[in-house]
Length: 500
Image 1 (cartoon, rainbow, N blue to C red):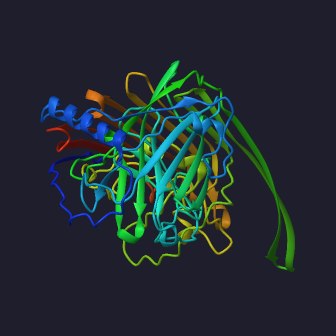
Image 2 (image 1 turned 180 degrees about the vertical axis):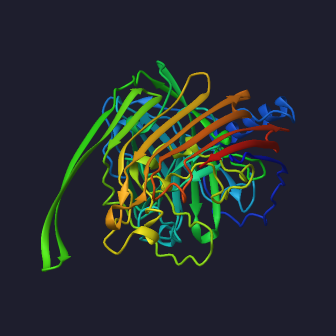
């Protein structure tokens, strides 16, 4: 008999203000008049709005460059000379809204294809700037500059692009305002340079990596962070307040971006793989040839709607999972690294125990690593020569966001039947589907989300008594912030039906 399951989860959290030690003495420097004026204006706006509304967003302006700057970590290009300088950084760690030890400033320009950001991190002792060579996406003990872009300007999503003085890059996708997807890898470039004034980072971000509404004039959510590692200090523009929930919702605004259009981004990547295999037979070892082919497609139907499809995908270049010995009865959750499933993964996230905290674990309704999983009955009907993964025949997904702050996502994938010894099925033909929608209200302060997932298997005589034939899950959740972003109430209602 089908077994319905209903779960009700609710949480209420109060964000506490964090106080740090007094700021250390700072070296003499020129007063930051523009930054002080900006801070005074922001403080006045916050007081005028009252305790129940978030402060007005700080603003920076981008200008169109007649010629793209050379990416070399220098600001001697004509484009940078014409760009306004924005400063007014504030410390958020160890002291929230404290005075920063060193001055930091940035400039932003753009052309028809790219967004450029130049960040100058002043430091009176450049020889003390901390360096650390590491792999991409690995945070070492070094200084860091990071830019955050919410191109939808929905105060819920975005990307983070970080670099250290040695040019080591890190990037993340933001979803649900504060959650970070470390598996996201964008196409962007940056150049760094250490000089007598401190160090610099010059970013180039293609507009093809951003999703934005179809409009003549764009306003992006924007922020810049700086880490001074030797003092364990973190500064930001605009001020980031750990005492309030959210990250994307605390960003400033980047204005002045006009006429970047809506390019029809199209990528088609076919592949062919040939293998020469050695197989053991009754008369000894024999040689066998295998050929596979497939293709990946990515098409931007509009600046805010992306179609991604794949046929017989090959993930041979994806980094292998770490070795794990699981002695429990519970499934091991691995990070998603396959390119098709990585992009836009935040749209499909629906964690059951993730409302306030940043670390949600893996208690979600959709786990993409089950698509193409190891055959479930390999131990029963397979041997050492049986396949270790289930081939994905085809998959497609559509992700986007409307001008009315409605985020949509739909994914469907079909995996092949896998045969073990004597023609017995170790994984049946299976279809996976998920649909996700989320409506943001009150500039992202309130949100309502829905999700539906479905799994349908084509069972036979070897799998009918062991595996479920179908599973359907429908869920909804809400969140509401109040008190100037200091309080949040959230809840979820989930129901499931399993048959077979």
